[in-house]
Image 1 (cartoon, helix red, strand yellow):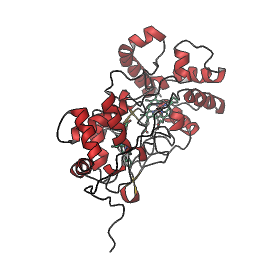
Image 2 (image 1 turned 30 degrees about the vertical axis):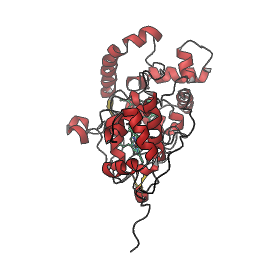
Image 3 (image 1 turned 180 degrees about the vertical axis):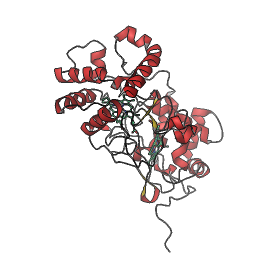
Image 4 (image 1 turned 60 degrees about the horizontal axis):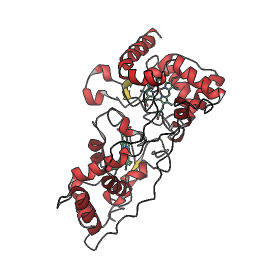
Length: 336
Ligand code: HEC
Ligand code: HEC
């Protein structure tokens, strides 16, 4: 317990500086989500198509949206994702909503930003199982894509940098402002119910805000999963240790955003908590040494549900058809 308190105090101290401006504005450790700034609209439209295009996968069936479904909070709502050939993924798919606010991408932060992240899944054998060269070959074979890339980037050849830049630009638009909680922060004092406000008070006073704070209510630090009590005795994942090799980073994970958390079940890196109620109980116990009553848990859950913002809203992109020259998808293993 003492360790938890020290950690919480230290985190609060170092986040205080970066949130000084926000605190001056709202006096609260959480800031409203801002709409995206300085977006290249041509790039966004192209990135949107690529995000929904399953032809960037070997099977011709898996797109970014398969695992980060924008109709379901930017997640897949299963414990770990399903990849090429129905492979069982090793880890829970985090939401892409508000991911532009993350200090780094992936649970262990191994990608610096959205552009660096976006090339990964296309070539990951357990996800889209393609290669960058093959994906570029598909795009180059589709005349409407060739024209659109040229229009947006002004180059004769499509390269992977253009693909990942466009996807990242589209992802920057996937922010969710205007949640009821943000309306409250911005002065609409009747936006929250008595129970929701009680939940927010518990969230602050118990120390959840030490790790879950800022615009994304998370996403801005790596923290240990299991500060007071270990999460699991037999957890095969090592978290940030896999990136830094430092023992102190063992079981450290990027603190997930709690924006839209109502939509992004199941929870934790292994998807082991099915409900928000369970996730809140586990957090209270293993991060803070607190056993919340049923009423307290209910109030925190009620508060968390006020963090659901306006979901991205656009016409589904219509993808340009393949040409005679487009390599065909390989959804099934060759027959023996
Ligand atoms: C087969 C399922 C699957 C597909 C397809 C997929 N992803 Fe992911 N995505 C995941 C999983 C699982 C993770 C977490 C991996 C980790 O942290 O080790 C992830 C992580 C991410 C993250 C990091 C979010 C965060 O908070 O750290 C972003 C952004 C993302 N994916 C975007 C994309 C884009 C863009 C595409 C398409 C090019 C894509 N994903 C395709 C499953 C998938
Ligand atoms: C010491 C830092 C820390 C504190 C304090 C903390 N959390 Fe977390 N929280 C994390 C980390 C790290 C994760 C991701 C852990 C994982 O999946 O391995 C997480 C995950 C979650 C999740 C699951 C989100 C998702 O998308 O999977 C919820 C919900 C949550 N926390 C709520 C809370 C609440 C409520 C409190 C206070 C009772 C709290 N947290 C206190 C660091 C913290």
